[in-house]
Length: 173
Image 1 (tube, rainbow, N blue to C red):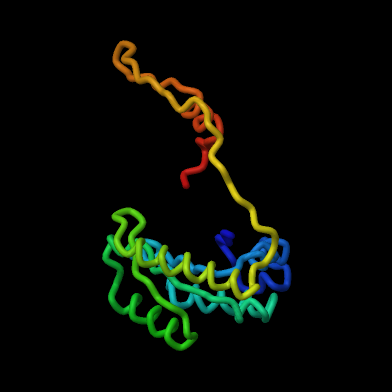
Image 2 (cartoon, helix red, strand yellow):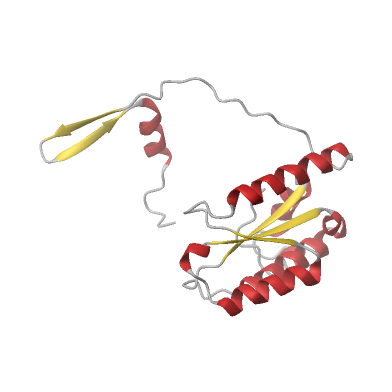
């Protein structure tokens, strides 16, 4: 479950509100993915406190679930004090802490192993929430071709053309 942009007082309906928070109730394990980029101007430890507070105020039972924290974008060399503040906040809350870089893959295998084990354990103990959904890859035509037309390259293929159609080209993110 992805909860980007959770704001203070979301549990009271502010921002995307409680409808948005209800999605978290389905999660068996909660992973907080913090953006450690030094260019955002954000304070990851403060963001974690906001997330934890809002989830607990919305549903105190969420604090009983396994919660992990992954400090992402470590390849961008975040300020050491920012990382340490987040680490200390995790220790205070009893949250397992990981440093990762999705871009380089650093730390991902350890995080994914721990996450997989936490989900398995929670399910075995009967703590699964919501229905279990199994996704299967539907075989399709993944072929694509790249051809040069004058001074440009044109990429053709069912899947890549569908991705282009689904892309919001006006959204910079």
